[in-house]
Amino acid sequence: MRVEPPEQQNFEEQLSELVEGVLSGSRLHVAKAITLIESGERLGDLLLSKLRGRVRGIPVIGFAGPPGAGKSTLIASLVNVLKGRGKPVAVLAVDPSSPISGGAVLGDRVRLVGKVDQSGIYFRSLASRGASGAIARNLRAMCRVLDAAGFEAVMVETVGAGQSDVEIMGVADIVVVVVPPDYGDSIQAVKAGLLEIGDLYVVSKSDLPNARLMASVLESLLSGRNRRVKVLTVSAATGENVSALVDLIWAELDAMRSSGELEARRLRIYEWEMREVMMERVRRLMESALIEDGYLDEARRALASGADPRELGARLAEEVLKSALRRLELRGKKNQSSLT
Image 1 (cartoon, rainbow, N blue to C red):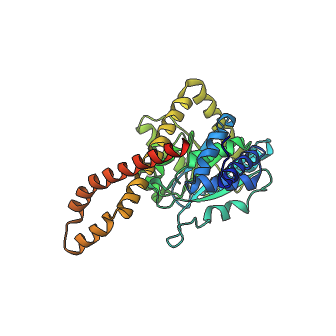
Image 2 (image 1 turned 180 degrees about the horizontal axis):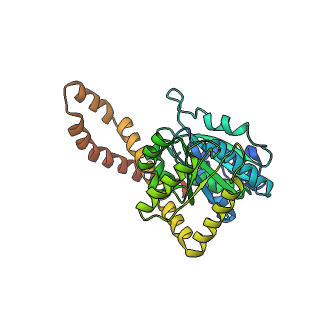
Image 3 (image 1 turned 90 degrees about the vertical axis):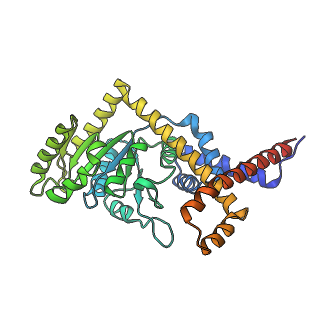
C-alpha cells in the first residue's frame, strides 16, 4: 500500500478544510480561497475543481463608468435593498494597484464599508496589478467560490478607467454603466467605449441638476447606434429609483435567460477565462526559461553592446519557447516516473 508523504497529507487536509469552510459560508475560508486564486496557487485550482458541482450559476453584475460616477455609493445602496429582500450579496471591487507593493489601494472598499450593514455581506478589494481593462485576473473563478459559499449575486466594480472598462464584458453576465450628471467630461468618457458595453445605463446623483438632461443625451447617443437599452436616473442619496434598478437588473437577467443570451454570454466568458489561464501559463513557462536558462543574462549583454531590442526579442522568442517546451516535457516525464 502506498503511503502519502506528510506534505501531501497536509495538502489534502488543507484542501478538505477549505472546501468544507467555503460550502458552510465561512468568511475566513472564502477570503483564503480568493487569496489563493488571486495569487495563482495550485491549491486554489484544486479547490475550484472540488467546488464545481456546487456552483449554481448566480448572476455576476458588473458596474463600469468614469471615475467619480458614484459607483461605490450606488452599489452600497443596491446591496442594502437586496439584503432587505433576503438576498446575501458579495462585492468585488477592483482597485488600482499600489506602485510599490502591487496590492489594492482599498479605495472602493473604504467607500463601500461605511455605507452597508455588513452582516451577510462579503466585500473584497482586488488589485488590478496593471491588468488590461483593470479587471483582476481570475475574477470569474472568484465568483464561483462566492456562488458555492451561498451568495445570491456578485457585484463587480471596476476602477473606472474609461476605455479599458470594456473588459468587464469578460466577467459579468450583465453590465451596468454608471454616468454622473455633469454633462461634458462624462459624455467624452461614455463615447470612449462605454456606449458599446452596457446592458443598462444609470445616471447617478439624480437629485443634482442636469441628471435628466444627461439621461436624454445618453438615450439619443444609444439610439444613434441602434441600441435599445434602458436608461434610468438614480439617486443613492435620496433612494430614488434604487429599488427600481434592482428590479430592472433582475428583469433583464430573466429576459436574457429566456432568450438564450445569458447562456451564450457565459460561454464567451468561459472562453475568455480559458484563454487568460492558458496565456498566463505560457507566460510563466517562458519567464522561467528566460531567466533560469541564461537567456536574460545573454540578452542584457547584447543590449549593452548596442543590440536592437525588437530584433533581439524576436530572435529570442523562438529560442526561449523551445527551451520552455523542453522544460515542460522533462517535468512531465519526472511526474510520470514519480507515479510508478
